[in-house]
Image (cartoon, rainbow, N blue to C red):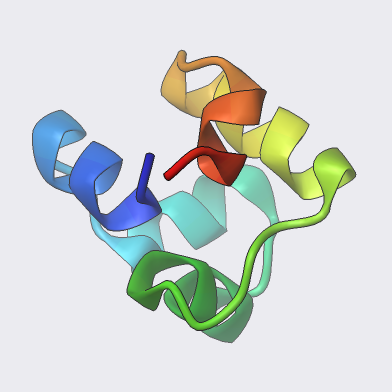
Length: 60
């Protein structure tokens, strides 16, 4: 599942997500665009905050 899709569904911006999770804004932009996958640690943080299963960030 793409981060970009989740953010649109939740009505959040990358900037808001960065402030709430403490994950660097530019790193989140790369995750959102699909240019980079999050580490397991970061995927767990994002999954918990966004209320999705963390492993979905690694599925097509």
